[in-house]
Length: 209
Ligand SMILES: [Zn+2]
Image 1 (cartoon, rainbow, N blue to C red):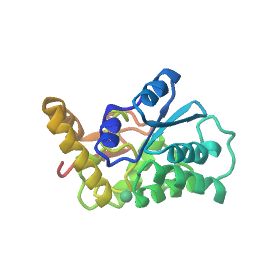
Image 2 (cartoon, rainbow, N blue to C red):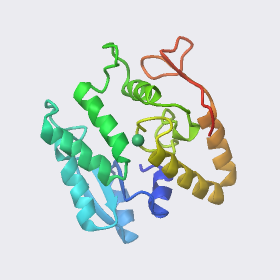
Image 3 (spheres, protein in one colour):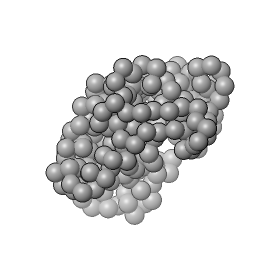
């Protein structure tokens, strides 16, 4: 199922396309609404044009979750770039992700291993001067404002995206938005598996929303 906040981002025009694990009935519902839809690899792609939807599906052909694993050569990295850019993720954040693919997405800077979300958070924290809770991506994806891993917790294009989306959400569902804001602002203590923990490997206290 597609995350409601992503659907809102698509509707207000700040996200060019949607990608979600596909159930055919959901793809049909989007088609019935006149959206451009492509399907493949068990994934549904919704975009502004049929061409864009097909381009996303083709970009993911080598890197979808069921694809045969192969070393991250230039073609694989280009596929990740095309997918991330096509989904509207900021260039700096896409490059941050590509760098982790090269290194190994579960490999921390010190060579030990941790869950992908923990490694992404550590990378982001190293580049951050002011931590903004609206870029917290450690909630389940469907609750996060940003549907990608920001390169830093003060990444400018990510902050603009999250601010625009939150404003639209607040205008439509003020109570749900207030509750999301409180959850995003809560400090995070995560263990190496990415779970909340009393023995954290990473702690993030947000400076502001
Ligand atoms: Zn960024």
